[in-house]
Length: 65
Length: 195
Image (cartoon, rainbow over all chains, first blue to last red; front, side):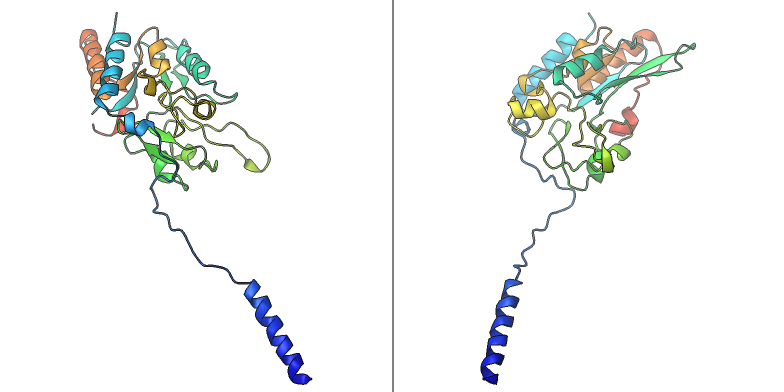
């Protein structure tokens, strides 16, 4: 009877401890590196087409009349 | 490759605030936030000068350096942008910026500021170009459409220049030569260093 109680106690303890289990997986991030989603403009920025378009716009609109 | 820069010619700025209005209208900026503002020195006195100030899109941006969630990124042509989905409204960038560019839309109990808002050089944010989501969060994306910032394009006296740094400095150099004075490229040393 005593052994049965002890065994029961051990089983309850084991089950309750199993409930406390937490998977320790961490995600490490490099500091100073952008974490957000990629801007579609990044692909377009710096391309010769967009640059020439912006350059033409600058010389046409912002220079003295 | 082009390096996008702003330059305000203090000799030409007449403090009309058209740049401020154009910015607010184009991007439908919320109340209490001014992405661009005109600062006047010696107001009403001899030697009065006005300068239109916004984010200068610094080469080594201090806002980006202090951001604890790394929500800033820089495009290939030097435009400093940020992701509002990552911003936690801590205010570090506001304290780091020498131009007072980062702004916060709300001030309520417990110091809740909301997501930081600043000039995007009319280049929107990381959402799809021209999407409703991008427009709501960051305003219009004129760069993707091949247009330059509206504040500079609307400037009636051509005091505010925006575009490729080499062309902008060439335009300004010609003006200074015509005036016969020394160039005073306000904010350029702080924003872009020696280059």
